[in-house]
Amino acid sequence: MPTPRDDEAALTADIIALAVQYGRYGYRRITAMLWRQGWTVNVKRVERIWRREVRNPVQRGHCFQHKADSNPVIADSL
Image (tube, rainbow, N blue to C red; front, side, top):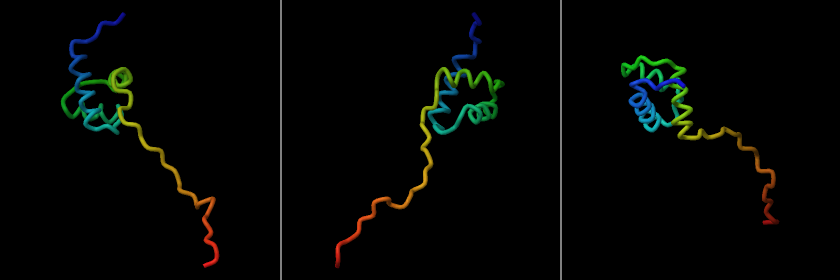
């Protein structure tokens, strides 16, 4: 069984903090933000932690088209 790295807890905390702050971001964008913060971390490692800890904190809305009303209300004679 693989042993966790020394920085695993700190990295996980940073990933969770970024996920809470930027709820709609995915693990790839979070990885880029971690790189900018100075972390030397692989995308696969962030994805593994992401799937284990975060798992999409905010669900994205579905896009759909509004169709014309299928049952229009027709007024009686005016």
